[in-house]
Amino acid sequence: MACKQCGKCCTQFSIVYPNNDEQAEFLRARGFKAWQSNDKFTQWVLRTRCPHLTQENKCDIYEGRPLACQVFPVTLMYQKIGLDPDKAVPKGCGYKFNEETQTYE
Image 1 (cartoon, helix red, strand yellow):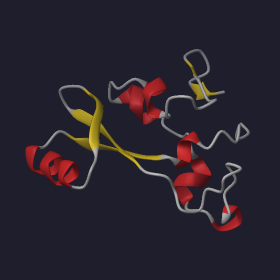
Image 2 (tube, rainbow, N blue to C red):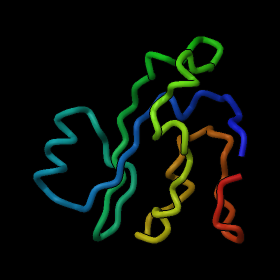
Image 3 (tube, rainbow, N blue to C red):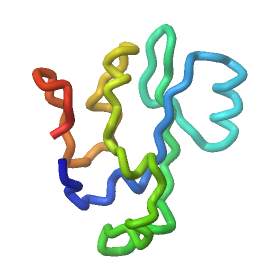
Image 4 (cartoon, one colour):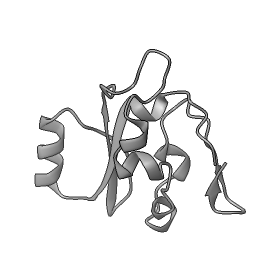
């Protein structure tokens, strides 16, 4: 997989937590919004632009970027816990989940 350099992944932060009222209150207080959920898990999204994303949608710390950025979009766990893997990537991202190969392309 090669990055499509659309910059979409650098404009939101996404995490998954087991459903918990206290955790939900904590995340909402910090600007996160529930994106998708089921009876056990919720994907939370914070829409914010990474300060290292340039106007050309390039990472200005690419060689030293965080591990979460290096492995994006490794989100196979979404399907295992019953969440939609296509919602694991930001709207407009070039990656699409391939059900047959269980990978993003």
